[in-house]
Every structure is written in C-alpha cells, then in structure tokens.
Image (cartoon, rainbow, N blue to C red; front, side, top):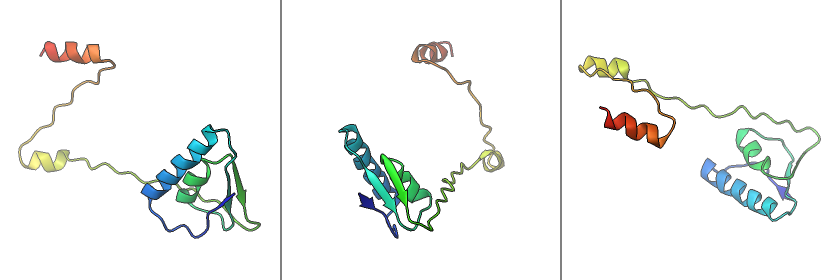
Length: 103
C-alpha cells in the first residue's frame, strides 16, 4: 500500500510515479493507493494508475483537470503584415506526400 499525503512534487515526478505503478500492474501485482486526506488533480493522476484507491473517512477527491491554453497569434501577425495560410489536414503519409508533390 502506498500512502500519498501532502503531495508536494511536480508533474514530472507524478508522471514517473504513475509509470512505476503501471509497470507494477503489468506484472500482475496489486497497487493500492491510500489518500488519507483526499486529493486534487495531481493526486488523482497518480492514484488512478493503481488497482485500488482508498480514501480517509472525511476525504474528498477534486480532480479539476489541467488548464491548457494555446495563444492565437493572428492579430499580432497581422500587425506586422503576415497573413497565415491554413492548409488542409491530411490523414496518411501517402496523402501528405501527394499533397506536397502537387504544389
């Protein structure tokens, strides 16, 4: 049983720990993760790689997720005179090669 309380590590460590749990599971071993105080997104990310997750009596889970933003640069580019050209997506490498050969 692994107890996760007061987690203060970053996402790189969380990902490594999750990978370790998954390797143990592939070896057909049980991975029981105990969250005595519950947890947020990071704790859930790690714990859900186990075979079982146990919570303390007054614990709650609150996996709110990760926020990812992508800057959209069209406005900034247009100020310097650059106009983006959107190309259609291609499904396969053969289509990509054909698409590039016809241009």
